[in-house]
Image (cartoon, rainbow, N blue to C red; front, top):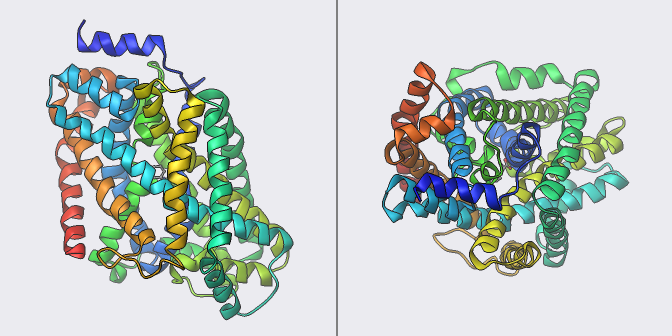
Length: 458
Ligand code: PHE
């Protein structure tokens, strides 16, 4: 049987599929829209000079992000298996070196490591959602900063919320591809959009939307520098969930009739719109209260609660806002758990339930270590980084660009061109353009990020 025959035989036997293209769109947007959009993007914009960062970020999404998102979805749909199984099938089909299966392993390891710290951050958000429900008591800036520091100093609280969040994630993945993952996204993603629109509307009405608009969109070339450039490139990967097995896995549940380029473009647009709207609503509130935009990672958890404690209707608005962040984090973490689960099911013929239990437990354990890295184990460091920063750096600065580079090279240089063309469904100039970007532009851009990162580490 030819490689392709095998691939298609596998597809028709066991693989679950999304119920519609709308289902795939929602789960993929669910994966992409996460803490990256609502926590990282605003604070990175705030500390990287506002509009200059936004402009470079938009360019990176277009030049590196979208072509890679298309390539990764293509790999998953053609392979119809876990990231590792997919790469095995495609390597066989192309008659390529087994080395390329490493793309699958990097994805599995990366998603595993990201979820371990992502879940701890999502745990902070759960704690703040809980507090927001009761309303934040008006207090000074220092008091809010201290409250966040107190949370980090308390391992029991961190572990409690991290455990709850892992359990929430596991429950959805236990439900399976359509009844679990797709259904959860069909509820949460429209909910997220509705809350976001409401909050931006509120920003226009009661907070300082014009100031936020100026900050994000009035381009100021003087703020542009190398640091801004690289921060924006790295973030483009993170926000589109690239290279970490999530997109390959979701692509593997996609049926053959859906046009990959169109839907990937729509996903990238939706992800970007959410980041920009989140930025607008957050900075409207920040500026209306006369607070500073460059608060760093604490922007979401120190600056915003302070703003909510002072503004009219702050209790309801604050609570809605944190529910939105929970939805965003939850739908992303689902996409981080599924790749390892599908691998265990495939390799060890485990049932889904057993696989979910094993993976969740292992990630939970690493997350517990992350929780301790903020307090009791603060002394432990490697390359001068604590466990939290180490995992963040290893994945977003190293594994993601590495996987992105390999995916671009594999798709454009290793797979047979006819197979790629058939799967992507683009013709003529559009195909050639995408193919060339993937073959030349994306790899070069990623290599530049890499060299920069190595310079930073070394
Ligand atoms: N894209 C998600 C976010 O922005 C994070 C993520 C990365 C999810 C990699 C899956 C895979 O928060």
